[in-house]
Amino acid sequence: MTGPVNAKEGLFGAERAKAFIDAVVAIAMTLLILPLMESVAEASAKGENAGAWVTGHTDQLFAFVLSFAIIAMFWINHHRVFTLVERVSTALLWITMGWLLSIVWLPVVTAMVGQMPSTDRVLISMYIGSMILTTVLGLATILYLRAHPSMHDISRDRVLRWIAVDLAMIALFAVSLLVAVLVPVVSYFALFLMLFTRPVQVMFARAIGAGRAKPEDAATDD
Image (tube, rainbow, N blue to C red; front, side):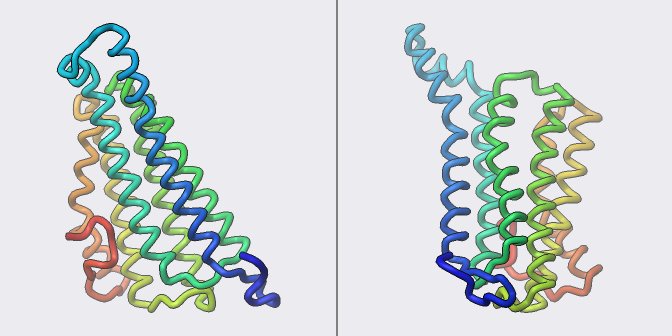
């Protein structure tokens, strides 16, 4: 953003914002691997073989793969929105900073998930709750763009479909959290409820009057 694209409206070109978002997300995804790298060094110092390392760190491996997939899903959905954003405002940038903060937090809570009891209700709430926050901020981004059509080239129908996607994800994350807290033995496996995002999205789309869902509208679509 070298300067306002529209000084009267206080809008700026979106290219630097997009590059910054991609860089922060890439760093966050890379940080997920650090606890595993440390454990490899510890295993090597103890003379453990690869099989012993894998067996002893299944929780960390599961947490790494799950969080990597979750962040990838968040980024893909956000990328599909920002691809059509041509200008940004200070307000939109602050919403985006909040979204990035929730993304950067995930490697921290993922490290906790990989090393602390899977039945810890507080940790479960922190982990899945952070995903709800990320989705809520993604929804806030779309709602802001809907209210400021001069900033993007997104059709009304597509905006409504994306709103339906986020509403479906928020609902399923909330149900996953409820199940994981009430039935601790299920733990983070409750997040596999996210596989039902597409049918729940269709329900929300019908409720808000959105057009038929299309494959390009969500990372969770087939």
